[in-house]
Image 1 (cartoon, rainbow, N blue to C red):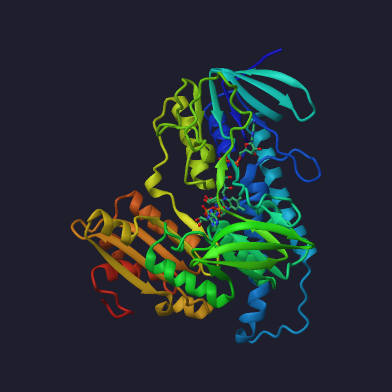
Image 2: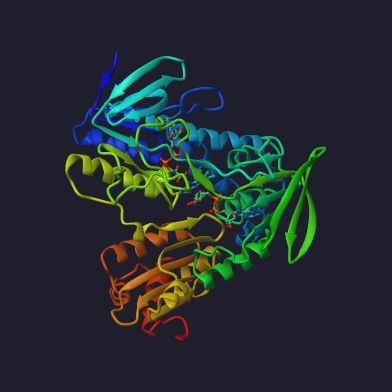
Length: 475
Ligand code: FAD
Ligand code: NAD
């Protein structure tokens, strides 16, 4: 028999579960449909982000950073490290525990918000109607005037290097390695390549990343991207730009790669290969053939600023609704769509979505880059301050990197903030907040920042926009 709800959400990733909670807070009767099961076959909420994305990768980044710091910097603090031993099994178990804690937390939030969870696949049959097939093979029909599609994304496959889950891995496989490979190849110097490459390099692997583009991180500010590339190289990550993979073949326990670079074909043998060349929106089996929802040529579901698709009462949020493919974007859209359904008019401002790469140092930015403004012919001021001029960074032994604030030359409004340095992921929020309120560099320069803090580098960069930085030479 059909079950009736006000809102049915397909997918319990950060987009789906947040939209469900917000809708429940607003008084709606909500159901969530989610097929994800963990490696033991137990239902698990939280989507890519909690199960195989943001959270497990950050757990391993944290553990591996400690391991590396113990070898590279603890001695300078006067801490002896004789007898250190890597227990990868324990490291992976800790990661799994963090994941379980958070996915269990989402299940608890569903209960406390009185949201009905259906463990299985949902398919939008037509406006207002979802067919449900449970992981236990039960079937049901869910009726609701509002259906939110939040089915996320999956890794892109390269035809010349198909995943075999043994030697040629996607990001999920790369998070679950049981031994540190001697030599790890990665295709794609994007966010996943850099983060997971860092994890395994820190733990002892030789890591070689092949990137098809000749530019490194083209979406980032050129100056900071250049510095980041240099720092990653000094740490031992080998990043080969302009390298196009031609083939990847199993050769016993290894993988033989052939790639083209500078007009010559080269070979590389690796123990494991991770393919991280982007993710594609996931709608397989989600939309019945004649449900009417439009999907664009890249597979995303086009939506307006409130998450509305071309069919009334059907919404799409998060990765499936288009780039950037980020958890915080999915969550923000999740809240906005629930509020829209309630009649409130909030939306996710895509101009203000920060990007973060959790390498060491971290790399984070929001807004425009200097080169993009140059291309648009917009005159700007750039205040650049190295962390080497920041007392807290020096005390921490984290003096690499810099902060760059870009402001409009005419109005002084901040147009972009770029940070390569310690805790850039946390510091960037000051830039996002400033931009959200239309702040000028002068506004940030006149804001008192506690001393000694890393955020003083932001203060100093704001001063530098007007050539009045105190602790660095103004240019
Ligand atoms: P997802 O999290 O992908 O969730 C979609 C859900 O829909 C899944 O649980 C899926 O099982 C479910 N689903 C699929 N089909 C159906 C169906 N038929 N019916 C019902 N449900 C269905 N982003 C960040 O912002 N920060 C990070 O640090 C970060 N790190 C990452 C690290 C890795 C290794 C990866 C792979 C990704 C990372 N991301 C990060 C990206 C982030 O995980 C995604 O942007 C985010 O999960 C998108 O959320 P979503 O809700 O749109 O989709
Ligand atoms: P990405 O888009 O960040 O990087 C993919 C890289 O692969 C690009 O540099 C691209 O030029 C390169 N590439 C594409 N085809 C190639 C080929 N044939 N050979 C060599 N290089 C090739 O994608 P990703 O790293 O796979 O991550 C997927 C998504 O997950 C991203 O969109 C990202 O937003 C999200 N994510 C975010 C975080 C974070 O926020 N910290 C972390 C991990 C993943």
